[in-house]
Image 1 (cartoon, helix red, strand yellow):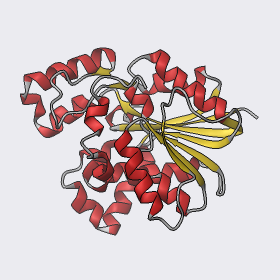
Image 2 (cartoon, one colour; image 1 turned 90 degrees about the vertical axis):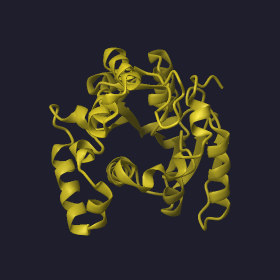
Image 3 (cartoon, one colour; image 1 turned 30 degrees about the vertical axis):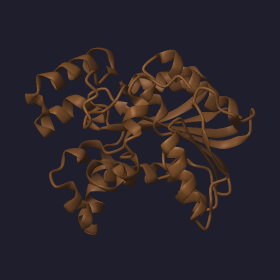
Image 4 (spheres, helix red, strand yellow; image 1 turned 135 degrees about the vertical axis):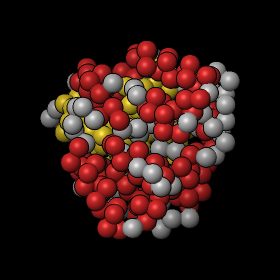
Length: 272
């Protein structure tokens, strides 16, 4: 598999499995579950979780009655997903090492495809379109692709919010992100993100449309709430958490605010 430079090394550290348990990752997971509930067909539909990592979404979906195949290019992720699946009451249908651009499933064989990571690890547009076209190919008519993207302005917002704006190496990365959308970590700094592509909302919608999918969205995942201080403490209180999510829902499609979100999510429906 032709994985972009640095991606395998980044995820081989094993930090992805717990990333969604705290801070912005926790908010990302809460909102992603909401949006999956909005767009996924009812169980027992067949779902391909492409780029599914250690199974953060795949295993609960399997527990909810879906038939879930997890695919990921990182061997550690597949191993972690297999181990968790073997210990689960409702295991995955399969866990495979595979590339989003070449799915090992036949045409018209699945009801939903999750791309909650692959698009932002494919810096070249042709590769992103190939991944979307593959998702379209394996979907049954009426099926849905749910794809995540990182906002074009994510690193710029992070630089200001965390103080990384003081670091000239990071601000050089931000400048390239803003100019081209292609994010690279030349020195492979451990706490900095790896090779990626950061989308503008309109570009994400255009890419989904260009392979024949009918788009809905994109919408903000974390929205402006990712800028809240002491986010874990706020999310720990149920009433405050509900208020935060209400604000994000109310502003999820506001064009003037979409870029403030770390992640965007879009659904693409295959024509019947």
